[in-house]
Image (cartoon, rainbow, N blue to C red; front, top):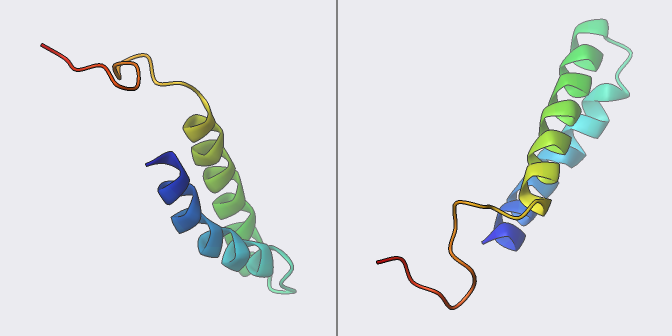
Length: 60
């Protein structure tokens, strides 16, 4: 699941990178904000989720 979500974020990051390189200040700020948000999401996906059971375990 994490790998799938990171794959979905990849095209968004490419778009954000292009916006961040824009000469237009509004586009550049938008791209920078997107990059920050996507990086936070990516970092969150790397952390183990304490609310989820261990792989192969089922909740009762």
